Length: 373
Image (tube, rainbow, N blue to C red; front, top):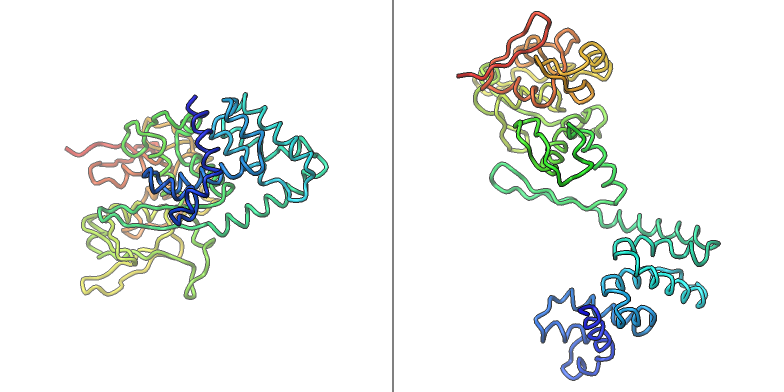
């Protein structure tokens, strides 16, 4: 009943340009937004729908007026019909309209939107392939034009990212992130809370995806990045030698941000950063090493050798683990050798660099963790 009343409003709106003209309003929708304090975008969308049903799609208008279709279903149907090829025969247009109006009795607006993309395949199969190609090419051009990313520092150590990308890119990113979000079963139901590998507590799936995004950035190989200024793109972390050795104090990123010394040591195991160690006079003492990250062959060898996380009592599979410098720490001159590396799950890798924990090596090579008291 509410949709039928809304449909009546739309039918009046479609023929009310004379009311707008009396006050010099640009359209009846603009006039309506002003006098009813309606959000302008909502009123304009109603105006476009009203005009389309009044001028072109009378079967849709009739369906709304009788309650056979909701206003939101009508929006999806009209959008799909307006996307039909300009030269399509009038009979086929009427057939397409009748088909989608009939399907409104079975599908919600989102499903109708998907059906609308394929309506030409139903009413004119011979023309569908070429139309779909042109439609997809137009969407891809629009997606490239609309792609953007903004960063807004919050001032509390976090930054808000806002990104708009093509659906295919978003789908690929989702696949990558869910591969990182161990234990990767929760993506089947994003409403379920899962175990956070860092805190050990149950958290929403969105939190794990956020952490997975951080892990994804940390794991990008430097050699795959564009060359910039004569060298592969890198992030340089400057840290006093004493702070690195004693795992106290802070390090500075080349963009002005700050990291703790323990976080620098953790990132040195897996992330594409180059730590620049400074002496007491703040002069560069050491810049990275020729080889700091475990390569894919070493990583594969560790997976075969270790099989799972090497923390005592942990059985997280090797595919979900990270490579850790378990011999002489990287910050104390350790090397990226297979003998010095072992696999740890994300939870235990964080604990390995957590100053609140003592780490000891067991006779079989596993690591045992004890919280400091």
